[in-house]
Image 1 (cartoon, rainbow, N blue to C red):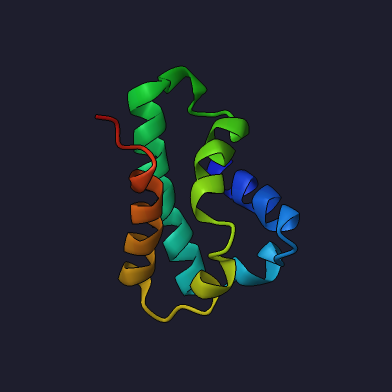
Image 2: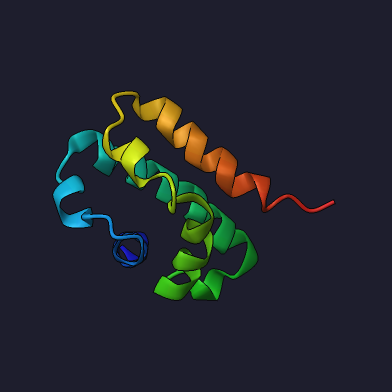
Length: 95
């Protein structure tokens, strides 16, 4: 899944230990759910780029930096997904 490779790269750039956090069930579920929003945006805008890690990174860079510790310690799956999705969509709205 390109989103996980992209998330790992962004975590490394931000000195966050992705490998130890991805084994936490809540963290994993948050990333899977958030990836759905990113996949939807990519599918709508550039369906041919869906398998490109760089395309996933472009969107994950909006949401993950500064959020890693919060979501890795989260006990509230839905609130964390909503938080990340709001950050993502806030910058994707066009008027």
